[in-house]
Image 1 (cartoon, rainbow, N blue to C red):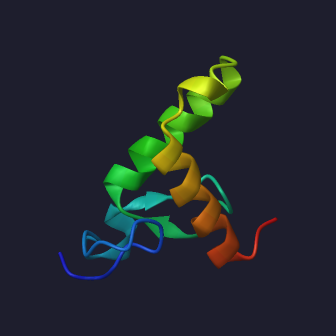
Image 2: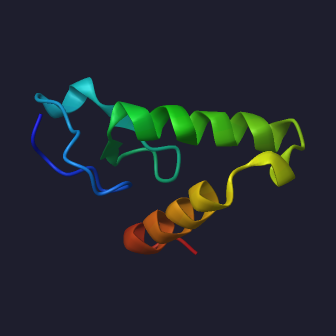
Image 3: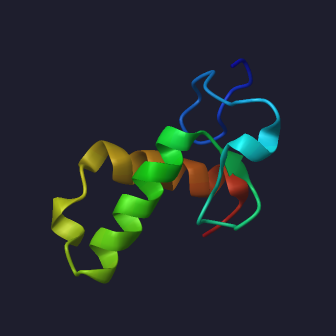
Length: 72
């Protein structure tokens, strides 16, 4: 462990980089496994029309990450 996850900012990235998750946002940025799980849960909730059940802090974190990637 050591590198900072670009999504959550925590030092949770594994080496080699390929042992981490790829973000659903741009399909190329590696993020930590925990963030990968959250992104997939949010995607599942959106496809099931459960937007109102996504925690506010996760929506805010995702918005900041999208801005960092230059998306939106």
